[in-house]
Length: 291
Length: 164
Image 1 (tube, helix red, strand yellow):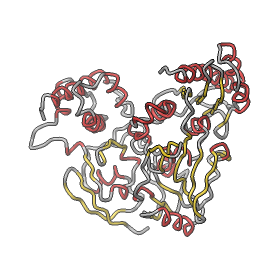
Image 2: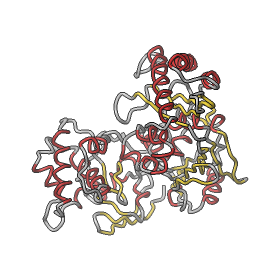
Image 3: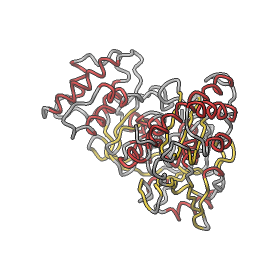
Image 4: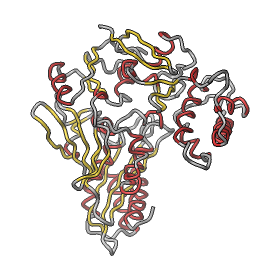
């Protein structure tokens, strides 16, 4: 399969990339990992007249901690996240997530920022970032602005990024002590999109009472879903079996799946229930210092 | 569309070409350079038959434009053999019957090459589950995974002994 012809632009700075975006018009596409864009171009679902390759811009491939945030740069690859010691020890939910995205070869190219900027409700990081309460740094002609992740996904393949903006960085707040998270996904085979996925990030106190809960759902709505009712329900509650069961049922009720080749809406809703309970249990174990 | 000049080091040899931006790396390798060892399988970034090593990382060459490889180094299956001597992985596939039809083999070899390099500082060989995780983006329709795992282990052992 051969993509339609396009003009290839390879800026060396972010400023240059933004000005090329402005000049090229709203149909131009940013190429980072390309693992979603290039397949879409090969299928001619995407036919951008201009492709702006940001891979030649230096110093964007970082994963670092500063000022209370884990910062993930625009060119950090999924495999960088997967093999980062910081992520493995401090953000197991991110390690869970990246390890079930596509396959190891795709993860060597695919970027974490691209997984969000693509705006695909079937992608996995959106749910995780919703659970973690991340914010996204966009750079455009007027400089930088920060977008809370809960207002980033505006619809199917649509985000709050303006046509002349680039997602430069993901800022994940460093969790408070006694926090834990987990991402669970059911996929039919390696590389498949989620039949459903659930991300949970919680903070508990010494008595096992939930202080904060973040819950994101994958591929059960037209855009990544934040299970706000379930989050509110969990806040201030002891995480016993009955509470977890009730929370799982609430999350299932908040999901809005549709039937497709991966299953019926009822099946997916029940899967959200099962995965939410499991993810809550695992997150709770991790918050208490377990693996 | 205007063609773009690229220079790519392929299997240690600097290759220059004028290419359309939409030319995929796999087509550049197979059609421009006539290096047909790299296979096109699914053409949808699922199967891994087109796997090559780009700057040390195994990637799917059907999902990268040739222009993205400008100024970089590519290793294909043709570059594994050195001075008439098979690479330890190639020998492993030969000894352990790691292939039947052979279609997935170039991709399996290149994934294995990068994987074993990443494990080269470890004194213990990779576990079966690590190997199976590493090859989860490479499909073998003959379902010969058992012997492919053995071939990787053969190569890992040989490389630890300081073999090829």
